[in-house]
Length: 125
Ligand code: FES
Image (cartoon, rainbow, N blue to C red; front, side):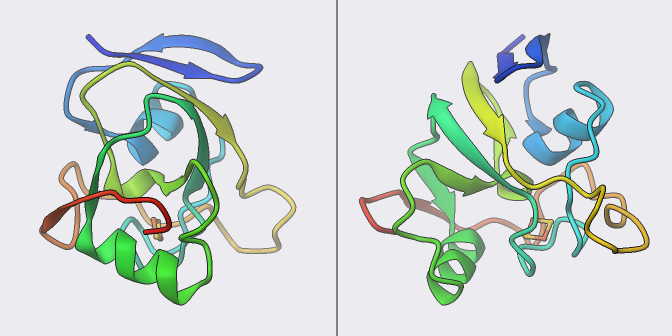
């Protein structure tokens, strides 16, 4: 199983193919914010990669990160658009508590939504 290392929280074994946002909620058991429910519309599920940033990116992630001015932030990615299929080390940067929102967001589906169109991640995209 891939290993997910979360800075200051430890190492976690995650079943291959788990959406990163669901791994953070279900396995790491933190209040990862995901306001749009995993649909690549809000960017509140963003995390900071230290190691193992995926080289693939969904078209939906690429587009909203560009629209929100986040595409040029090194290592910043949307956890709802990433599958745990290799070892990765991240820093949690967007938690629900203290935001004022009524909850962390609706339960994301087990599969990536919208249906992913995979692109190659390039610098600044
Ligand atoms: S973009 Fe909203 S939960 Fe990922």
